[in-house]
Length: 162
Image (cartoon, rainbow, N blue to C red; front, top):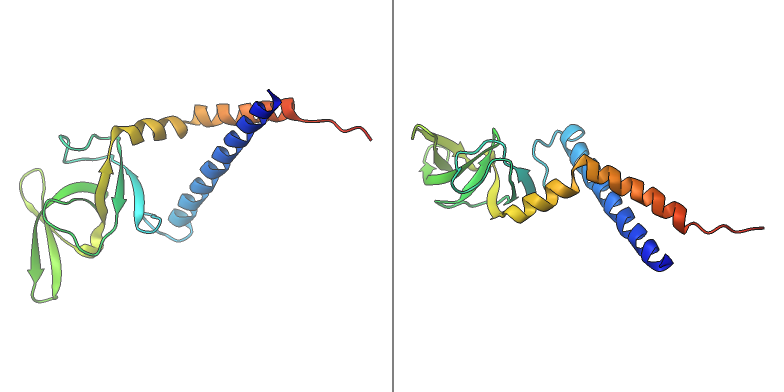
């Protein structure tokens, strides 16, 4: 029984440590390095707050993005302004010698972007991520895990007499 409690204690400790490290990373990227949208090796996690694709991606759901050099028609992307949309067309600007991305807004007006203003392409969208992340990052769950770590530490602590 003592080994099971010790194992549980280690699992909770590792989770809380990883949670803390991830939070420190994202906070430092945002405030120290002025990185508006932090990512790791081109991959990032984004919580959708505004959405023009309500039939494909739910508001308040999480998506995994990957930043790329090339995008193609019908890719779902996140661009500056933290909006998600589908690429409607790709045009080549002869004057600047750059590819321009064409999106349509809700009034069917064209939005023209350069590739540098795109954060990434949506590569994974699933409700399982939402459930897991909302549960594991909920403040009450983190507090309960911390309190259970304290409790487990006190129950598995061995006293050594000198």
